[in-house]
Amino acid sequence: MDTPFIYDRFVTGKNFIGRKAECSALRNLLENGENVCIYEPPKAGKTSVIQQTLFDMRISGKHYTVCEMNLFNVRSLRQFLLKFGSSVIRSSASTPAEYAEIARTFLSGTHFIFDQERLSLKDEVVSIDGTPDGEDIRRMIELPGKLAESRQSAFYVIIDEFHELLHLEEKEYEGIFRTLLKILSDTSASGFSASFILAGSKMNAMKQIFEEKKYFYRKTEHLPLQKIGSREISDHIMRGFLTGGKVIEQELLSGAIKLFDNNIWYLNHFAGICDSLSKGYMNEGILLDALNILISTHLHRFTNITDDLTEHQLSLLRAILDGETKFSSTEVIEKYGLNSSANVRRVKDALRKKEIISFNEKEEAEILDPLFRYWVEKYFFER
Image (cartoon, rainbow, N blue to C red; front, side):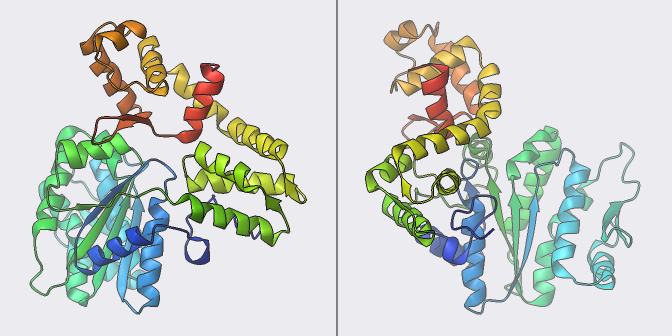
């Protein structure tokens, strides 16, 4: 079904709104051979920005190879290397013979060989303890750069959910990070090397990698995504409704944009529900029905989140909703029963690890999911 309100996949072209500055910045970085990290909450538009940028580069005549992989299910070093290598080879070849040739040329001497049946890499016996060695890691991660150099062409590697590598043993993910850092630091003699886009939806885990531990200090450029402007969102939704001969009051639409904190994914989903409920005029009742439907879709997820919270974590969440900022002050600790400043630090860390809240550069807390914020205040705390 053709709809202007797309929320089940990334968007490009006429369906992409806002974020022109981010696309321009990303394009400049990639064309200058820089490496980029992007971390925003889930459904914030990371993939759409990346794909729109590549789309703009392609239609302007830029030639490049792009390799995409998602690490959401990676739980071992071996699994990462197989996924990485297989993704790079598939992006660089179109026939089994070409796949096999790349493996023979660039991975000869490693413990990985090409599987003709599955058109992917497989590993032989790798070491006494069953884990890949340092040479395997180096040869695999440098593969995109070797291909870029041999073909004299730009090569972009998009690694989504990069933070999932933290699920590996510390010595394993630090081995990957050290190797990747060295490769990001090397400059190809030919001028052609691979650029990496390291993206993730777990804000705090990505901050741990790039800001706290600084594994890739000065080797990646952070590209923050700003909120899409309310006017652009409003025009987009108004146009979408008008294609079906439907209208909505600006005041009602502005209220919805504010509730969802300009999150275009939630707003597209919300508008799509409204569109299905109405045959013409969008009144407040339709918007409330659509909001209830949207909440019911996420209810199980929201209740699972609150079920997993301790009393102190819930108390801190209540304090955030009340607009408190000095969580370690005596007044706030007594008001919300937080016991001590040391306990406040533990509770803040726990909520960060659960990716419920994050803190900006001013150490101001924000609840990452706008619909969860609305639900927890209205339905859980019943305020």
